[in-house]
Image 1 (cartoon, rainbow, N blue to C red):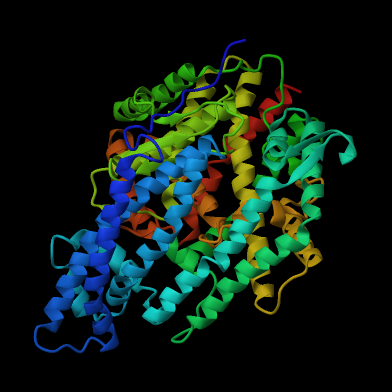
Image 2: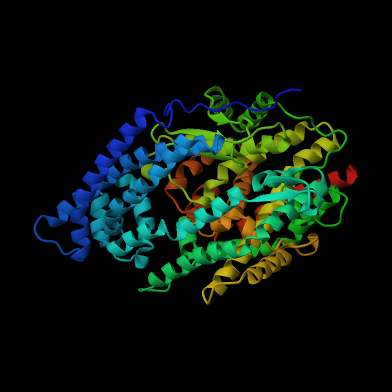
Length: 615
């Protein structure tokens, strides 16, 4: 049997091992820098405490100290980020690697120290008068950070005192973040029995059971879903305690930050995503307008499996196995497919894909200790991306490869920018990934040799449509209603189940066979303690990327230059500014989103035709 597994990645260009002396050298230099930053930070603490009333020479001394701290902070964050990324990469391939676990654990306390010593600069720049900030930015060492500084100042009314901010950061490790870690540990150790209604059958971990929901056998998927829910149902009180504590921590912090004006629980996530609250409201309103189209897509998926409605176990279902379906695709062939499709946009994109493969910057092996999922990351010092996935030759795997390489291309386009301009919000993080996935899917559709082959390609697209236009709004519906209720008191497990069931029913309607009352338990996104409302950015990013893709044909030869410019600007503009400058679009109004959704209708109609043709 042909081995369809992909290659292992090469991390040796960064560090040789978790015990590499280069890591010790980086952490020693980091400790030195943090000590210097802490010493220089006293000038900034004094300036804030005095309300920015300065004596002779004090103003210029404070501004110079702030500039020096910024420069040292940029160096320090690289020295911290690279070992952290390296440890994460190792643990992704082998979750039990003890040396990588030790390194990761060691870095947690360093991360707290880094945040603590950098907080005086944050407070100084957030609270200083406008003219002082302009003087600070009038220097080439810090000028590239202008957008980040001005954007951060938009939340200056929320700031607590320096001592309080450091206290929040320190207590968070054993507070909100501890609840998130508790959930992760529970999810990593739970077992469930698949088969025979859970009375007999095989005992497996949750990740292994979840992988069965990618089976083409409807009964296997449903059995796995019910097994996972049975297992979680035994721990709903623990999960309820965790989700209530995480939400309660955030809500209390909002109350504490409301001294100047009321702080809403959505203020932090919309700011982090660099969008306006009104843009989010417009997006969700258009998603609701589009509900009938999304339900049609879900019903067509169900029809492909010869049933009237999808079940909650069908979220990750593959295309049904049909005569004429494409065979498994070797990894080398997948690289050729992705490189060819990327290259059709511009040769530079195809060359990037081949470089990633040639440099072994893609991890695509199969292994018993690998973590599930896929991602793209990058190393801060070398500015080189890495892609992680498990490759087994399916059409889904090809789509994932195309998706993650899109993230990699985004990193690559930004590699020569100043560090202060290379961080972007989740709202645009999916731009290049979904664009790349769509380019590859359209190329595969053109090459499909049969209706069954076309269905296999179109399936991935419709799964995405259902996921983004139905499942993501379901999560958002639940989470907003939960936070509103949690402001009054913690919710009981049965109340959380009811809220979740209502959200599933509202958004999926008659396309759904039954709701998933325990989705609030088994979806880890609700327990990510560092990222509130990890849901709507997916929908925004999906439609924003499709809006970019829709302009490819219209712009012709102009497109690639504008596309690269858009990606390069993601770290120095709001999402509204990006759309206005590079897409000539106003995303605060519904037309952009409506037009993007309307472009999906012909694709859904084609999918419905393919389902009928293969019936």
